[in-house]
Image (cartoon, rainbow, N blue to C red):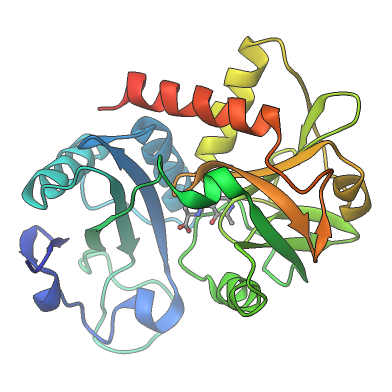
Length: 286
Ligand code: PDD
């Protein structure tokens, strides 16, 4: 069955879902995206994703063509129309298509483009959650506003292609000797003193929705957390390492650049935080 996509007010078969070659998302990567997980047909942590969407569009002076309440209704209708039980809803909003290619913003009558589609993914039962993933390191060559969830993802495409070629599940990006984040995930370690360390939010990283929930859930359980940068040497000396994202939840990292983290097996804290997060996700799904 051809999946159903949403394009500017219409639900259409994905193979017919089209935008103009003049769309500024296509020409300039002048747009913002969000990815929310779906479990048992319900959206996970979606309020957090929509609030980050509002912040991202605000930072690039783009006005959403629909209210976030309406956007959530569309997300839900798309999930229902696709009979999606487990997977992801992708959402992208761009500054629309003008009459030609002109860098400054178009006139105010040019409507932003809003596109959504879904994909199936069994995040809860992913094999990589049991085995853990290997990561490689790459230089972080991105721009200075990584807090904005922009569709300009070429640096991440290259980082994740290098990871795929190396047989790794993620690339950790390095700046000034410290890990910023993964190509599409937030990065964590657990030190030998049982402190969970993840980089503090700033313009240097995307403020991960899963990161935020995991930090809160861990703090509620009296686990110690430090939000600060860490180095690869620290990660290799750590008890555990893991990543978080909407598309992976919590996944253990068992090796970095071919070197084992601890005994090279998923650690108990990452495994526990994964279970806690899945419990939170199911309990708060909409
Ligand atoms: N990526 N850091 C980066 C650079 C990301 O692209 C993502 C998400 C995250 C984790 O954020 P969250 O927990 O809100 O998903 C961190 C999405 C899943 C993607 O591009 O597919």
